[in-house]
Length: 135
Image (cartoon, rainbow, N blue to C red; front, side, top):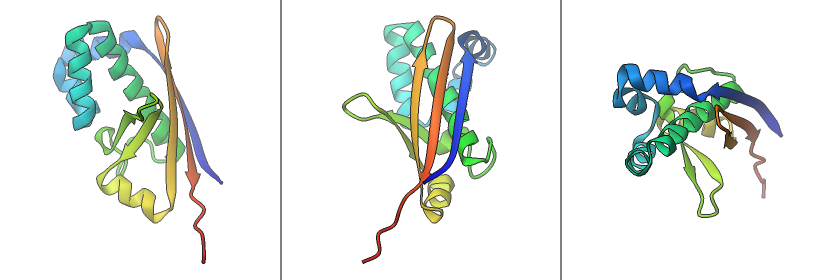
């Protein structure tokens, strides 16, 4: 059963402006530890790929916050969920800490999709209630 849905569209220039003002501190505020490693690797190879990675993660976390009905307030924070990938490339939200506990108590699981174009990134999240089996 669906608990909530959320979407976010973001102009990439907005993320570039934040990076210009705050440098990597901005990325470190948004990204979890595994995401930060990926971001730095992509940024070193191609600055545009690093920027797109950061922008899609920002949008994905906004969409998840909306689907949870929390916004960016505890237990949801920028670093409370990482958007990682399965071997197939499918993005997977991985909550941690207080958010993971909050979601587990409510039997919630999030799904996310992200996309990027020349000027924008977008994300769509679905949070579902996991059906518990009784045996």
